[in-house]
Amino acid sequence: MTDSLPVPNRDSIERSEVLKRFFADRTHQNGEMLRMKAASPRQPIPVSVDRVRMIRRSIRCFIFGLMGAVPLFGLGAAVLALRLRRQLAEETGEPPGPKEMFGCTVAFSVLAAISLCFKQAGIILGLAILLTALQCYLMFRHYRRTGPVEWNPARHLVYWGASLACAGLNLSSAIILLSLAALAR
Image (cartoon, rainbow, N blue to C red; front, side):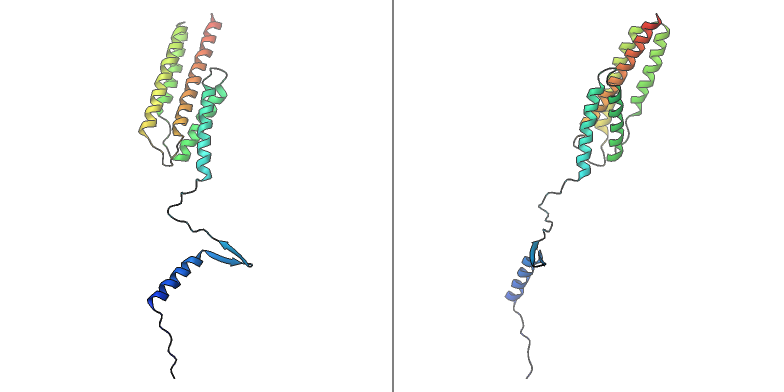
């Protein structure tokens, strides 16, 4: 009179596991059947909003750099491009721009002031062009040597924008210094 429990065989265990897996992603809620998607390794990782924002800001930096390359009229856009470049470098964990690039600006200011004292206004424009080319070289050397912690597919646009902004700032300052030299005569 002992009731023996039925011993499940191997086929019934496998079928029950298959059924559990099949119904594991389904739940009943208020009489409705909802399917909950489980993450599979084959599905692409969804793009975060921050990455999209970073790409848009990189493109904006390039556009501000293009507008900032226009001497005198693009001064505000050039400043915005350089500010965006600094903010994007902080967000991506990239080291800040090369210090030599800012040294070029100081060297240009000193040499331009000296050439104005000796009434050599033509040298100012040549210095502006040469130091702008040197700044662009230093910027792209920095681009190749460093890598950000956070991946940014539009990183090259940030460097183009910052280089064009620096060129616009240098040429704007050269035009201002040349106009000051012309007024001094």
